[in-house]
Image (cartoon, rainbow, N blue to C red; front, side):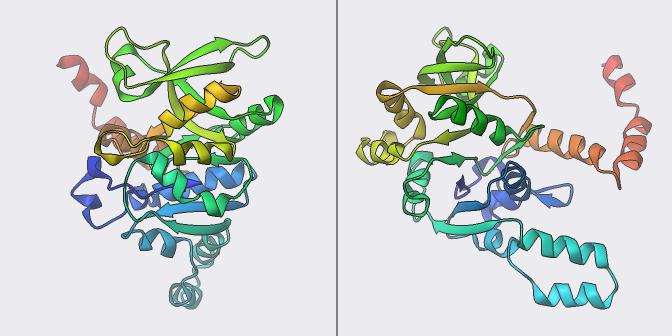
Length: 290
């Protein structure tokens, strides 16, 4: 499940008319990276939660006969194959979130499509790149421990107020796998139970839907997944996996720029020339002089 119905307010005015999932990193939309990471993890069915302006997301993963015919006439075989591959990446179902009432509300909107099965949640503005894929790391922990899993990453104290911070209990064996005891949402100074932030998606069990339905809306009438997770942790063992890999919050302007630069450098077509350009700017010497 990929909730991608938010307003994308951190990237306004661009996201006034374009879904945040269609923001391009080099020439590839954010949503492409997220779906591709799920596919690489072995996931074949994806539920994409969209809003009223989400048609571009649906069109992106659809066939475009006119474009394909034009590419075929022009002999652009590689591009033609890539366009067809995008349309065949996964079996994607679209669910409309009619009101933006919190990320828990977005997850709940997809409950009928998910049904009575465990499912992964990947946020629509979080690019997670790992080997193995980050969601596969979470899935492996879920299978091993037979329970829900929260992806976590250690963050500096200055960033605690941005995330849900986890209270955990270390388990024997893998130092990257812990029992998750509770979540403190965006704690103030001295209030965080650890430096482990709720980052990296989730593997959840369908009992979370009943909890979400029973939650009293928070301020502004919104329903938050973090509140449901706290209750889930009271009812059954929930685990935290400190994943390995890179994470880019594409809804954050600075992280968006970092993703653009780092992923452009990895691109075999433009990476070498882009690296030469960056070196020509003399950024390191300029930074030293300031």
